[in-house]
Structure formats: structure tokens, C-alpha cells
Image (tube, rainbow, N blue to C red; front, side, top):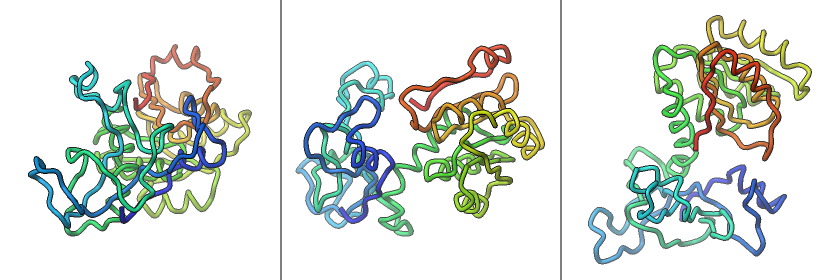
Length: 262
């Protein structure tokens, strides 16, 4: 291993010893955003060689269940994902990993950038799930690392206008540098939702066709449902809370599609 990122999930496990239903009950190595250099290959591996620089896909599925056979292997019930209890992560000197889940990096991509392929894939998957494209204006809730890569992915998918929302000035300034058309600073007070929804709509200057919630709190989801236009789409990307209270009934009247990134 030559580069390993520290994900928010790693911080959760370190500080709280759990994330959602995954609980740390014994010592566990963290890390799943990673890249490294091949030191040894199995006899049947033909597409990799010693010295190859690779990005690692950190989830090992069973390849036998119906979900795997459908190509939705990320939902495999037997998934063994790095740094998800009880599976050890990749913050180590060496790991042993299936060759099919090691992807050779182009020469112009650094190992550090290779390690960021995993979080970038979250933004790409979210944009695919929401069908982001040249005709969809996108609102991103949260300007943390996942919010920022989702911003980049939405722009790469052709979104003509992207507004991003956060509580932190520095994060919003980074989002602006990365290409957000407009930023909106919000509070953590649930009572401010209605006013902030109007500010977001004004900043967009058009319909909010798709909202990608990269924070995952009751307030951000309530804001997302309020700001997204009738018939639009709201996609839950972040996992801030295990349980959320959101105004689904008023949103359902306007027929928005609501889904997670799976």
C-alpha cells in the first residue's frame, strides 16, 4: 500500500466504535480508499505485473448470489468490505486482494489520486442513479469530501448549473473553486429550512431538478425535499443519521422521486 485515505466512516469507527448497524467489537484496521504497487501476482493473473500501480476496489462480493449475477454486486449480502466490521482495512504495508478488483492506473495519475478513485466513485454512482445530464440543474447538500466529488461528477455529467450548500465558509469556498455556480451558507437549525429553501431557489435561478444529499441529516433531507422542483429527484448519498424525520407527505404531493445510492 502506498496511499490510503481516511474516510468519514473510519472516523466514526475510531471515535464511536460503530456506523449505522456496523459495530466494532474487536481491534480493526481502518482504511478503504487506497492504491498501491503490485509486489506479487498469482499464477493465473494475466493483466497485472510486478510494479504496476493500481487503485483498489475495496469490496469483495460472493459473485454467486442473484444480486452479483445482475451486476449489482455492491449489494451482495456476503460483501466483505475493507474496514467494515469485522473485516480489516487497508491501512497496512501489504494486502492480498483479488486481481479483478485491482485497476491499473494511467501514468498521469498519482497513487494519491488513485486512492481517491473510491470516494469519486460515490459521486459518479449518485449521478448515474439520478440521471444527471445536460438538462438537469443540480443541488448538492454538503460540501465535505463526498459533496465535492459529487459536484465534480455532476459537472462531468454535463449539469449546466450546480448549487452547493453547507454550514462552513471554508468548505463553500473550496466548492466555488472547484466549479460550483453558486454557494449557499445555511444553519443547523431545522426552523430555518423554509427560508433557506427560498434562498437556494433564488441562487439556482431555475428549477432544482435533482438534489444530491451528501450530508444525510434530517435538516438536509427536509431542505432537499423542499427545494427540489415538482417531479424532480432527491438522492440520499450521505449517512449522517441512522434515523431521520422528514416531511414526506408534503413532498409526495409534488411527486418527487426519492432514493438512495444503494
